[in-house]
Image (cartoon, rainbow, N blue to C red; front, top):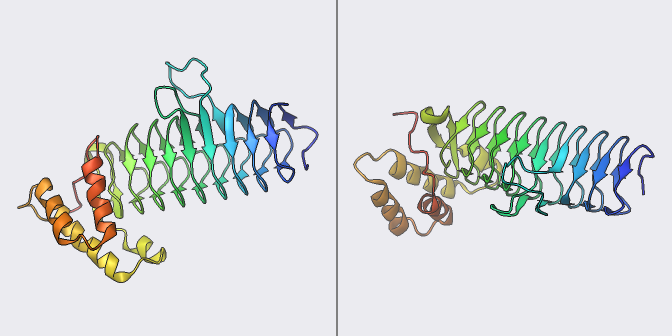
Length: 265
């Protein structure tokens, strides 16, 4: 097992024999780490944290620390991290709370760039990119292939939909629908259109992208339609497109409300 002699490893930790532990790493508590994961110098891993295969845990990260919640009293909550994630320098990810999910969940193939923060009870799906200094408050949900620019701040309990692209320095106080481009600060948040470039790069068919553009026009650029009527129209007239129905379901399941303002407003 390639563990540097300066590393401090708790006897309760469970490490695969192929894990690489660099100088001055601290592993405190029942941390479990899967095959091929590399923990870089000075990282601190703690608590009931489970890390999958082939991850890179950057230098000076804090992974699995207690949640920043005044109600937390040391309960055995969790942080779960999947496979093939890059978690870069100075990132902090906190485990869950008993009053929330009880766990923070990071999926697979995500890129969490330097100085990002992921608070308690957050859920990140797969192929998410968080640029430098992006910050998630507690209970935030990020869909697959979502992209958050640098210095983005997301309010607690907000959701970012699949394939959404949020421009740098945005402040998110409402749910951001899937497949859209968005930027702005809190009450100035605006959606500029469908994330066509990101969808094309993902391999999505042009016909599907065209359907999403049509759905966008109905939802966001049809002032004669109330939201409930626009959603009803999409459910009944575009029910052959699963991606459009994902957007409909996102609106219908929102608890905080969804960004509706566009760059034309």
